[in-house]
Length: 419
Image (tube, rainbow, N blue to C red; front, side):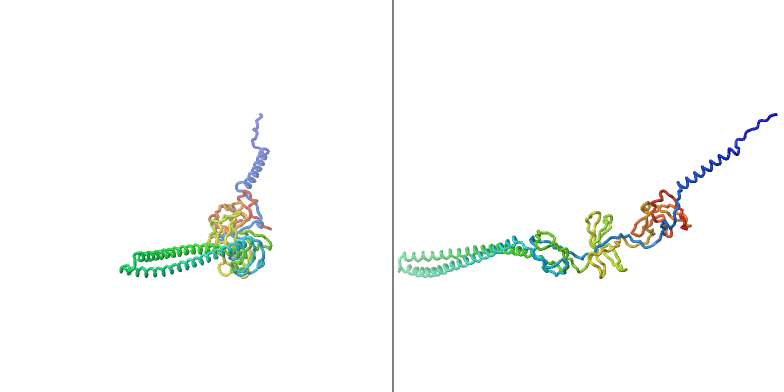
């Protein structure tokens, strides 16, 4: 009797293809998970930089280039225009206060000065002439008064005599009245002469006062003109070194043009350009330092120029204590300008990682040193050497601080030892 044999569903021949397919899928999945999600990247140890997080003194500062300048510079501008006639000293010479430096000539100014002098002399001559006329007039008036006084005395004597004789009926009425009229006439004459003499004195005094005031004003004007003429000889306002002289014989210089400058050599200052980003944090009194010949010197911000040019502003700094003995004008100094006091902080060395992470995360090396994992961090202040770590790292941690430019979205670095 025939028996139906049931066919097997899972034979060896049918299982093997399925096993192979599952294996392939597994390999594909493993490859996927190694390149996505918890993605890894092999890196060679000698091609990355590993830094250790530490704790120490932290001070926020910025490096700036400072130029050594004289402590004071006095600019020489032409107070009057003219032609350069003489040069008394060379550019770079050490000069004394009030020492002549150069001479300008200005014929218009010199002619005006001569006219002013003539005008003053004419006024003085006129005043003297008026004074002489006043004296002569006063003498004439006083002589007339003397004559009248004499005539009055005589008229009074005759009148008093005739008055007695008239009472005694010795002389006629006509002779008496004639002597009385003459006496009264001389009294009135004397009074008139005295008033005239007084009025002439007042008028003459007023005229002389006005003329003196006019002469005084004209002399002040003449004094100013002489001062302007003397300004044609340019003198050193202070002792120092003449620099940047801008004048040659024969040149015409207009009023106000820069002729040069005097650098005061009693000391130096340092002028630095700073990025405008720090303008709100830089103020008078901030300290800085620089090193020359293995010795550190301190500076203090003395003046802040608020004007911003090409994204930068300037500050002047003064030396604290004795400056270096060999320092020279125009020398460039590498200055560390402190923006804060020294404090204790967790420190992370600066590196190229910041360009890709913005300081928000970093690869932290595991304890065995074979892998580095992506961890979130928070950074605070910074200086050219360190970042201040606020969160995410502690002293002793090791992190990769070199550039992450080729890491893409990797979550983990596998650090391969260099054979």
